[in-house]
Structure formats: structure tokens, C-alpha cells
View (cartoon, each protein chain N blue to C red):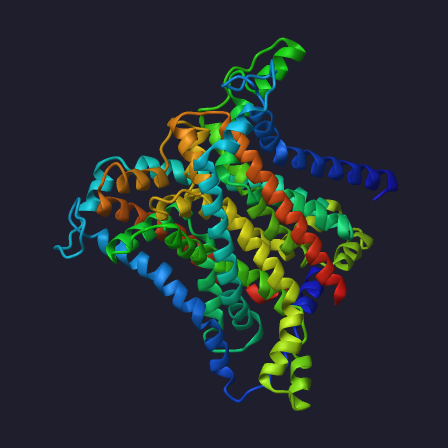
Length: 265
Length: 302
């Protein structure tokens, strides 16, 4: 390959990445624009802008409640899934045991599974065994989907470290608890944190599972859906943009902490 | 040349086994147990229930009943195959488009080195964390009559696009947009299995770009491509929001049929039977392909 040829290829590929990046963020930009449009229906170019939809959003009790519900669910899901996934990842990547191959394959099924169908199946299940659905049942429903994902995230970290360190510590007379606390946990730390971040963000943005399993409680994506179907108001893009920004902040803070964790090693 | 490369890659040294504990076999099982229990209660149980319900008489709301096949007969007789055909078509076409879009993207990202590549990948994948319906709403406002595209075009050129939503291509676009990260990630992982030296050596030996792609890159990256395609196929088979927002009822997908059977239709057995058919369809595809892929190697076990 000639140098000019190579340079051209590189330029083209860079331009391609840029185009895809722009496309990925177009909807967010449009949602942002729609949220500051003064008129009730979004028309571009916009005649006037206004912040009244944000004021209405701020004053809405329903919106407050849905944010609180979503946040509670996200925190519960993330905490529980990190604990389950930590041990799951050890079983997935670290230990040799008889059922391991099967475990690895079965674990993927909920991730691959159409969420609307999983949500409806869980609804049927909760109804049949007589559980009153609320935000707690949504936590459970999301765990079924998120725990496997977090397990994979931590497993990737677990693949990367050398088990000889643990064996050396064992040979030197360290107890199981000591090994766990001073070697395993710190080595997997970045993976655990990344998994936690993933869990919070996935739960925060999840709609289908919450829609079918939350009973009378309403999460933010559910509130948005209700408004989209039942009558559009620019509060929809306003709330949408707030969730996008909040998600972005969680991600940015999380990545900074993650970067610090990685550098420490 | 190619054979030699592949051979050296497959010769993995036997991993030294952990000598930590005498009860090694059960150690992994104990660690996996909480998740196994979770999946039994939260996945296998509900799926078994769906399977049982699918054999119950029409409209039953409780389990004891004489089993019958009438729901499956209904599905065939009442033209539900149309929504199956639509879902299969949408899933298939989306996978093809995503492959064409994501492969060069993954190659481009692989060429970039260091932290910038991570950052760019992250930026492309980050929209995954925004609720699907917000992003789809954004596209509706973009493509609709009087929306961003229509309005901007009118100002610049005087032309109008009118409404570009509420049709099948819009739904396909929505599905491709939403599931792009699911195709990109596995392909990126797959391309990680292609050693730089192998490509360079092939070029040095006079291989054309096409030959290098066909004989070296593609076979080595295949597991990633396969997983990505499969993942996208299965999730877009369950597409639901895309057809609802960008299609506004021009077509009905299986997932929508299932939802209406469970909700407005109040016919749990029918919804269950539809779910079972979809699960069988998706499950057999996944199972067949997953047997050919070594997950340990994909994720980088040493």
C-alpha cells in the first residue's frame, strides 16, 4: 500500500467514525431543542424558546415521584447485582468446575432475551404466585437481566489477573479471608466498580421490564411512555433531557473514579 | 500462510490449575449458586409457566385446566404468521444493515490507538444508557413533518420532505440505531483476535487487500461477527418500541401481538403460545451458534 493510499484510508475511516458519532447523538439534540420550544408542538425552525416546560416539570409531583422511584430501583439493583455478580464472575472465569461451560451459556440467555417477553412472563409469574407488583418486583425483574451483564463485566477483569498470586499467598500461610480481602477484592475492584456503573445506568434507562412489572409505581421511562402515548407535551423532552444529563453525569463521574482506580494499580 | 497463523493461535498452553482448595469442583458451584437461584426463580420458573399456560384453554386465568393445542391452532388460523413474518424480516434486514455499518466502524476504531479509541467507543455506546423511548421520540421529532429535517431543508433549499415516519424503512432505521452498540461491541472483540503481525505479514507476502480481508481478518474475527449478528437478530426479533413509535401501526410485530394478548386481549394462553413460538425461534438460533463459539477465548482468558 502506498503512503497516500494509507493516508486516504485513515481520513475516510476517521470521517466515518465522526458521521456515526453525530448520528448517535442526533435524537438527544432534537429532544433538547424540543424541550425549549415555546409552542406545544415541536416545529423547526423554532419561533420562540421558553423555559416554561422545565418550570412545569420542576413543579410536577408525578415527575418527582417517578425520579425517586427510578433512583431507588437503580441503587437497589446495582447493589444487589454487584454482590451476586462478584461471586458469579469468579465461578465464570476463575474456578474450574464441572458445570462451568453450561453456566457460561445459560447466563447469556437473559441478556439475549427479548425484554418485552421477559417482562410479560414475569408479570404472569408474579400474578400467579400472588405477589402484589410494585417497585420491588421491578428490582427483581431487572436483576434477572442486569446480574448476567454485570457478571460478564467483572468476569472480563477476573480473566486478566494471575491466580498464581493467590496461590502464593496461600502457600505463605494466608487465610482464605485474608486472601479474599487483600488480593481478590482489590484486584477485581475496577471491574466491580464498572459493573456497578453499568447496573445503575442500565436500570435507569430500562423501560420494558419496569413497564410490565412495576404495578402502580411509575419509573421515569414509564412516565415518559404514558405521556407519549396519551398526549404529547414538551415536558416529555424536558424530562427526557434531564435523564440524559443525569445519566451523563453519573457516567462521567464514574469513569473518572474508574480511571483513578485503574491508575492506582 | 493462513494455516500457519491459525495454528499458532489455537495452540494454547494448558492453564495451570488452581491448587488452592481440595474441594475445587464445588467451589465454583457455590460461587455460582446465588445466580443459579436467581435465574431459577426469575427466568426458568416464569418460562415454564408461560409454556404451561400456552396449553391451557382460551382465556383461562388459572392453571388447572385440560391441556389443549387450541392456542397454537388459533395462531395458525388467525393470520398471526403475518406478524411473525414481519418480525423475522425486520430482524434479518437489520442484521444485514448493521453488519455493513459496524464492520468498517470496528475496523476504524481498531486502527486508533490508546485512550482515544476507548473514549470514542464509549461515546458510541453511551446512548445505550438512555431510555429507548426518549431516543425514538427524538427521531420522530427529527423525521416527522415540520420536524428538524423537514424544517431545516425548507429553510436551506425550499424543498420539503414531508413526514418520513410511519413506514417500514423508518422502523428498520430505528431498530438499527437502537441496536448498533450490540453489533459493534462483539465485532470489536472479534477483531481483537486478529494479530497485527498476521495482517502485515500477509501484505508483505504480496496479499491484496481483498485476500487479506477474506483469508485472514474475516475468519479470525468470525466469532465476534457471529455473536453480534445473533445478538442483534434475537433482540430485534422482540422489537416493540420501534414499530410503535416510528411505525405508528403500519405493521404489527410479534412482541406487539404478545403484549396486546396479555393486556387488552386478556387472553393469557394466546400470549403465552405466541411467546413460546418466539422463544423457540430465537432460542434455537442462539443455541446453534453458541456451540461454535469459545467464550473463554473471546473474553480473553489466559
